[in-house]
Each structure stands twice: as structure tokens, then as C-alpha cells.
Length: 434
Image 1 (cartoon, rainbow, N blue to C red):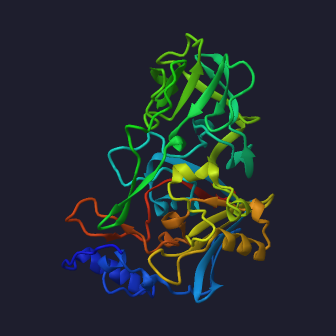
Image 2: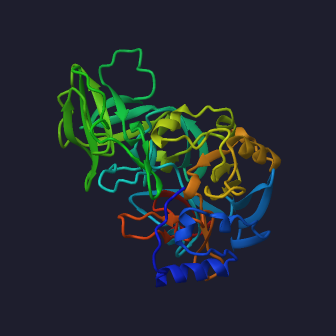
Image 3: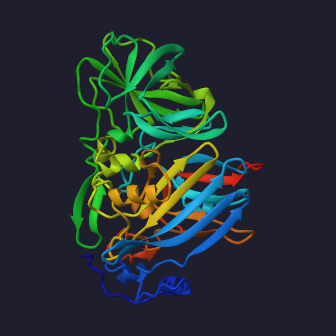
């Protein structure tokens, strides 16, 4: 149980309590929510909102048995009348801030690096694949499903962690560091490392309950005298090699990703060399407008096939017997559907859903669990939206508190803005672009 020190109620807490009360959530104090989130354990009223033509948001409670429940918020977009695009930014954003201009809704995106240590963070926090404006800003270390806008249309497909690139104009093949090494001659072949190679550790904290971080001293590529590791970073003129590490030991967080070469090292792998990723799996990057790696399918999570995600996420959110808030995505030929299964961890009856329950709920809704994929869940699960000219509102993870950064700082309620994100999905009407 988190320790919450006694303190005077300030104006920010009073304003937060008033906002919660207006939503039917009555808490004795904001600081008490760090130890007891039971005020959020209330079934949502059944309702339907229409952010734009072809875009529908519904809310309904779901009974999970034994007195437990979750609230399901489902956003459906008709892809003939609305557009979806994955967006990502290293500096991050709050979800509601994306709902502006032609954007009518936004959904929390792919898994990104999360830590409670502000002093040591990756230059590119998206885990595995991220494509922005047809530029691969982060490469996959292992085969995973991905959401991509391919030739102007959103689709989900499993992408092998392989491809091609050029460095200083010279062609290379590449593969992810978590994949088996190629059987052919390694000459000209490069191995990709990145933030997804990190190992999150959890440590007890007397006030917040736990603390997440990585050990910076060991957060490096494996050492090997026969290799040359090249850190690739984004520059005003595009991705370039910025540092060389003979023998390995490159900081996983120093650049966008790391390319490892084996002896004999090509002379053109030098500081300043431009890097251009030309293909991911069998897809030309020129045909990919934007993309993000996804979590496991609901079917795979329900049966524990989640190794590709577990280490870089720390304590696995896909354990089959533990309830978490979840965000689930499915994309068909004409429709995109995202569902948040809401929950607050410090409650008894309203903690979200297990991986098995999530797969069962997908089947009940008429979706094949093998074709429904996890987006970032837990306290990140959120949908922001607007109707008409109203200010952007949000559903999901309304219990979210900003943790104190020092001993004298209080917890702050940030339920509407939620966690600072690095990726999301934006929904616009078909004739508009954000």
C-alpha cells in the first residue's frame, strides 16, 4: 500500500475533486487516490457519441463475474469515411492535445519505453518499429505485428525483423538482434539493436509502491572484439552514423538504433555516413506513410506467447491470471475498431481484464482474437475525442495520478490528460488531414 503523507488541500486538488464530482466520481481527497482508487469502480452509463460521420464511440459496462467488471469504450471508424494514421514523437505529447483541427479522436498508441528516472531516457522511445513521414526512425529487433498506413490505407501485418538499407550509398541487408543470425556470409549484413533491447527493472518505493528504471551501466550492446557497433541518430539532414564502438558496448539509448557489423568492417561505416532504410520485411519504406509495432494478438496473449515483449516491458502485462486495463485494436478492409477495457489497479472489483478474458470478450463481439492486437495498456489506455465544437474529452484511465518527483511534492490528478505519450492513433474525417 502506498504511503500518503498528510497535507493541506490546495486549489489544484479542489479543482480536481470538483471535476471528478461532476463526472459522478466522489473521492475524499486526491492524495487518498494514491492508495485507494475505489471511487473509480463504478459502471459507466451506456451511451453512444458521434465525433464525426463514420466515427462512433460507445460506452458500456461488462460483468466479469464474482462481483468484478470492466467498462468498455469502443471507437469504430468507417475507413471509407474516416482516416487513421499512427503518429509518434520523441518529445511526447498528451492525448487530448492531438484532438484539434480536423482530428476528431485519438487513441493511446504502441508500447514505448517507460521509466521513473528522468535523467536517463532513450533518444527514440518507441519500442521496435516506428515510421514517421516515410522515414524509419526505429527498426524492429524481433518479428512483431505492426500497424501501418501502407499505400494510403491502414493495415495490420506481421513484419519480419529483416530488410535492406544503404549506408553512405552502399547496400546492406539487416536483421533484428533478437532473431537468429543469418546462415549466409555475414559480409555486408548488419544487426539491429535499439531501446527494445533494454531490460526494465522494478524496485520497491515507500511512497509510490514501485520504481521502474534500467541500469545505465549495463544497458549496452553485448561486447565482442569482432564487431563494430554504429549508433544511428536523427539529424537535420536525416539519419546518420554519429558514433562508432569497436568491440560493442554501445549505449542502447544514445541514438535511434544501432547497426552492428562483423569483421571485416566496411570502411564506409564512418561518422557522418547517411543511413537510409529501403525495406522492412518485403515492403519498400517508400510505400509506408507511418507505422508502429503492436503488442501480441489477443489469442497469443491468452496463451502466453509474449516473449518478444516481456523483457523490454518489465513485469509482463500479459500474464494470463492478472487483470489490467487493456487497449485492443482490429483493422478490417473497411473498419477500424479500438476498445479500451478500463480498470484501476488499486481497487478490488475494477482492475481491467485478464488476457484470457480479453480474448473471450473479442469472440463475444464477433472478432477473431488472432486478429485483435494489443496497444499500450495499463494506465496508458485512453481515448480522447470531441463532438462538434466541444473541447476534447477523454475516457479510460481517469484514475491516473502524476507521481511526485520529490518528497515534498503531492500526487496530482491528471486523469483527463493521462500519461505523457510518445505514440498514438489519430482519427480524421476522410476529406481532412491533420
